[in-house]
Length: 494
Image (cartoon, rainbow, N blue to C red; front, side):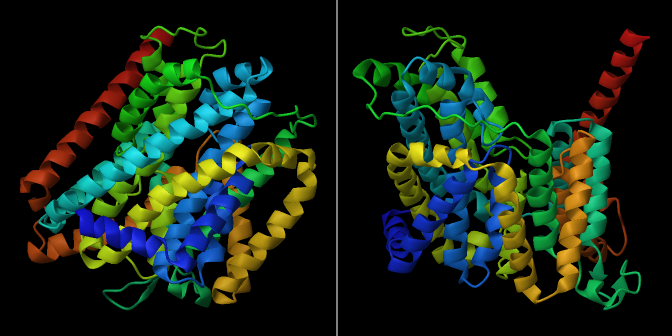
């Protein structure tokens, strides 16, 4: 983006309505993000209906603010109460909570917020610089190449996702099957509807994602029942010069690691935070050792997870590949507003892209302003018994799902997917691969259909196309590595 594009983006983001939506999204995201066990994906899923009546630019700005607000909120409870609001907060809690126990909760929260702010600002500039040229390059990719890229993205997501590979692949196929339910666009005939008229338009993204990530996480949180009841008094001294000195280098390293890992399909903010903390083990700390309340143990993971959270937008906006459940929710939100993420997204929606980049800058600043003085307020929400909050959240979710199409069938779908998602969590399986399959399955089918149409049914073009052939070669290599690793493990245990 050049100077004029940045100016246009800030002008759009600074309009009264969009600024209010960004602020509201940050508050709501932080408010829900501090609730342990829910996380950014579930937060987005639960609050998604709030954006249906908005125009596309405002909706995406608000969703992005909700997402980053949930990321910020998780660090607050990790530091104050050793109860991570989302997965990457586990890494922050290792040193952040030790600082809080030593009476330095204020500096710990300030360091986390400032490190996240720096990472967010830098990553926004990187996205704006890289995304447009990369998107222009991807528009030249043939449909066969896109088939290979989508296939590689799904296979890589199955390998990288926590848990066994085979169940993850099965969930991808199940998700793709869900995505193919409805009316075939090519033939105009219903498929996989089992005679149910409501399924002729397909399974709705909103009931699916709110069930799998919203209701399922609420049920699991109710099962855990490990909510803290006592909250320490929090004071707000700013970090000392020594704290800033100890934090700036880890922040730089965490930002670089998070920006690089975030663009990988299937990589998570937890992976980025763990990698950043692992790198810090190679550098000496002048205040405390890692694990004993070191400033570096707060700055590096927080910078890495915020950078990874934002750089994950690159494959979504340029290739149409949502590499995480949060990006899948954002992709679904774009589709709800008739905007297709992918190679043509930036060229066809320059105003939306510019506004999104501007809102990333403003949103990170707003979140720091909110989190420093209000962290104690967010933490005090944990005084409310979780069992009293759950009925309110569920009622709001039911109303939100019903309001999309005024369909009671969608409500039953959400409840069904909620039970199904809870069953997956009980089995130790994450629902992320299923959502990725649901989003990318129809796109894979469409590009495969175009490829076979252009080649007159010759499937070998998938191997002769340089991009597609390379992707399928990588899939074969990764699959062989997984099988070999499994065989070696079986031999060791025999």
